[in-house]
Structures are given as C-alpha cells and as structure tokens.
Image (cartoon, rainbow, N blue to C red; front, side, top):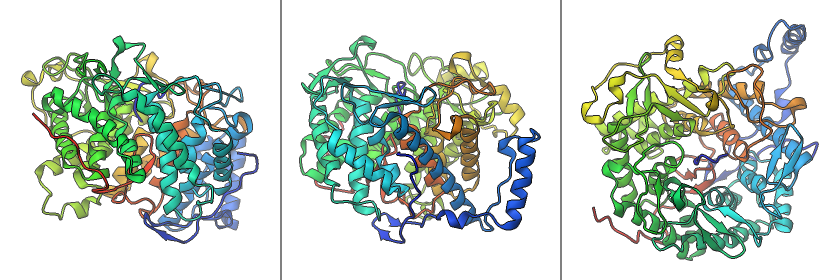
Length: 582
C-alpha cells in the first residue's frame, strides 16, 4: 500500500470452495468446520490449557490448540483462522456501519467520506470475499453496489486512492467473477459498469498542462483539483500508480483513452530524467517538473517503483522492465546501507537527493520492496525454476540476496516491539560513515546477524511513530517470498504476525479489529478505526500465504498496490505509445 494517508450481517457462515479448475489454477478446497473438530485427546488438552488461562497462569497466545497431523492440513487450518478474522471484521462492519466508508469499531459506528458514501470498505473488500469464497457476504455487497453506489456526488476525492481502491476493487471483482469458481452471478455486470462510470470521472484529473494528474478530482463536475498542500504539487508515487488499473480497463473495454492518459504520465516522468532511476517525491502537474530533490521509497515515492515492475508483468512492455532495472541498480548503489550493530540492510532516504547525506528513517511502507525485487528477479516463477533459465545472471542472484536481507529487516520491525506488531516508522542506528554521500561511503559486505539482542540496538522507534495502521506491506512481501523461494520461515513469520494482531488488535467481544496507537505499550492503546486495507490487503495476503500455490499463481496474475488482482495480459489490445529519449 502506498501513500502517507493510508491513512455482515450477523450469523454469516463459512462457505466451502468447490473443487474446480479455472484459468487461475486449481483452487484448493476450504476445510468445512467439521474437519476442524478437536480430537478427544485434543479437547482434553485444550480444556486443561483453558483452565490455566482463566486462572491467569498463561497468556492467550500461549494456549496450544490441537493441530492436524500433516503440514498441509496445519496451514489449511491457519488459513481458516485468517478467514475467521475476516468474517468477524466484516460482521462487525455490517452490524454497526453497513454502507459507510469508515468503520469505528470501538465506538461501534460508521462515518462517510461523501454525502452518499463511496462504498470505500465494501468495494475494497469484494475480491477478498471472492478469494475466500464468502458467497453470502459477497451477495449482500453486490446488491448494495447495484442499489446504492452512485458516483454523481458533490465531492472531491483523491485521484490515487480512488483509483487503487475503488477502481481497482471493481475491476478485480470483474476479473475474478469470471475465473474463480462459485462466485459469479447474473448481476456481475455491475462491477464493470461502475468501474467505467468511475474511470470516466477520473479522466478529468489528467487534464493538466503536462499530463501529470491533479491530486484530486471532483466527482460530479469531473474537474481535476490541484493539491492544497506541497505547493500544489502531486505526489510522484500517486501520479505513477494509476497505470495497472487504467490499462486493464482499456484492454477489457477496447477504449484506449484510459491507457493513453495513464501512460502519458510515465512518458513525462521518464522524459525529465531520473539519475540512476531514482525520482524525487513531488512533481508539478502544471510544469511537469519535479519540485523537490528528496528521494525515498516510503510515502510519496514507494509505488512509483512498484508499478514499474508490475506494469512489465501485466503488459510485457520492455520499457518498464528497463526502467525497473535502472531503479533497482540505483537503490542498491545509493540507498542500501547496513545497521550499526546487526548489519541488517535498510533502505535509507536521501532528503537532499543523490550526492547528499542519508537519513536512516525507514517507513513500514518500504516493506513492499523486497517482494517486488523478488518478483522482478524471477518474473514470478519459483526461484529454483528461474535459476535454471538462460536469463539468470549475477545481478538477479544479488537481487534475491537483497530481497532476503530486506525481508528480515522488515520482520525485525515486528520482532523488536512489545506487542510483536510493527510501528509506522523506524529510525535505524548506523555508522556515521555510512550516511555520507555515495562517493565517500565505505563499502560493507558484513553478514547480518540473527541475534535479536543486536537487532534491538538498531531499531529506534520515536514516540510519534509508534502507531500501527494494520498495514499490509510486510505480509505482502512474506507471501511473495514464500511463493518464490519456498522457504518456510516466511510462513512462520506471517503466522506470528497474525497471532500478534489476534492478541492485541481484536476488539472486545471479537467485533472487528482496530488500529493501535502504541505498539510498545501493553495493552496497547487503540485507535477507533479499522482500515479498509485490513480487509483488502493484510488479511488477503495472510490468507494467500497459507494457501496452496495454485490459488492465484504469480505467473498468471499481478496485484495492484491495494492487493487487487488483475490478469497478466501479455501483449494485449494496446501497445506502448512512447519511446525513451534518454
């Protein structure tokens, strides 16, 4: 998920998935609840543990549930627990906030982002329900779309967030309704109809002198609106994280306007010239020039890089692979440094651009990067298979090593806190010499440590950064790294993260999950919000992490920055309309 803003009816039952093969692979069956009954011995052990728990002798996280005998069944059971977390979240939302854009689980109420609501949570959750085969919940959501969702409103909306969440959610639902078993209905045309209506309104954001989209759009007038902050500049990440959605829409409708508007942005960005593939974080929609020097892969910069490799995976356009490879080389050269004690690799920031000193600030948002690097190195294939290809080289080998190192650093963000849940931002300890400009920085090939004691010396969490917004970036990377490397450690880490959310983020009586104000305080003070991306991304990636590889194979699909699923189209109806000049 990008951007610094990232900011059920009762009694819903679990629905089993059919044994069906589709174009996205063989969908593994969901285990019905009867297959998870405790054995007689297991029940006795659980009962004994429960007695100790109630007596205060052990914590809930220490209760050992009976688990099936084989690893596959154990991960299937864990997948079911993720599904249960989604259901409890959705049930709470529908009970207290149905049809509202925001859900406040502590005060048990909803609130709107526009006069009639935008379907923010409902649309963002559609494809997760499809993937989990929650057909009754999906049916209710689909009826709401048909009867209630209306974009003809006197409301400004963020161009980027509306594109990735709402347009992306509708298009993903359109795609998955055609390929996943058991989730289609005669009303499915509503997804594409609403998507076209919304996209046509969003087109006004691109009507700037440069083609760089305005930060916001007025839904009713379809007029682009310049940012009220940052001197009117648009975020580079926001302007360049619209392409997957618009290109897919062009491909399925045959209307090339969406493709042309979105790819024009990439032409303008590349035409400015990005030294070694690294771009500043703000750009003017009027002049089409960068308005700052600051380079970072956290907020305002992150998904520019993510969408380079994902555009290539989606459309097989080599121009984006070339831009991605330049960016990865620039990241390795200018931004990767070791921490002082554990020698963990971090992605630093350049507040004054290339040639300036580094900052050791690293947003949790940056944790999308290792998964993207692994995707780029392997093209979504299992690593063992990719290594046998003639195209495998030393650079790809180095990229996989970096992906592993950065994944460990991101996992450390969880491991070093009192709750086991990551903060929003970490400031790392590093040797002062490592913060110099690239030309003056000593090289380092020291191996990173696995010692948690040394990790704790390197992770510094400031009081203003201790909150957690239920962000998905680390579990996204864990999912991708598991699929690509098959190293079971990534599933283990994901399970520990999920358990921490269960223990500290669950709302009273199991009615949803909340964001947290301080991950280093037990019990952690809560925020009265359940983010839509908790349903759209975090739980979806955890569910897929514990699912068979045949469910949405990486060689057949690509996930947008909100975890919405699109097909890898290859060379579709449209082709690249620009060439690099530098």
